[in-house]
Length: 237
Image (cartoon, rainbow, N blue to C red; front, side, top):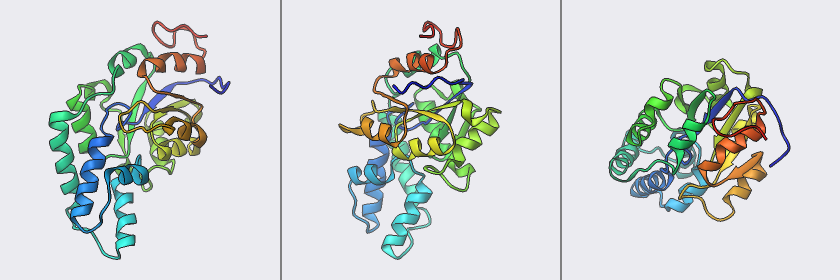
């Protein structure tokens, strides 16, 4: 890890691919719906192009390429399929509950997903009450990731200077957004969607460290912020 000690007063978590292992489900639903409407694309291509970005941004890009609009209810179609799959197969990221219990800092969520998707996923895995009401969505800002707007909104709402925020992200867009916001960011590459080399890409984009097991996170936070007693059971190194 880069030798970067700084004061951390807030940990900002992305949702999909960080708190919940949802990206494979979401990419499959997105690709199937786009293909049905005349834009053939595989789940892997959706992952490559749109991971970490808002549905609004993805739709604008696809419509520009197609030269026509998608149906007005395209979002609803995609999310209906996502929610059906969430109800039967969505899982929390392994060890996330014990990890959150070990972090003695304020936390919040900043996700590219719409509020109803964030609520559905966090409720499904029992994490909604751990974060609510400190949950922020890209629909609240003009420009989603990789722009810094969402992370700056979260910091402002949590009354924390950006320089004292630490972001946990799994996407290149999220890493770039956090760096642009002036925040330190750790890259998580332990989701089922992550291919070999994904972590290296996150590091190259600006993550100060990468990790693939949530049990590593409390120790990483302790290394970054040297305040005594920061993380339960993890003394500062």
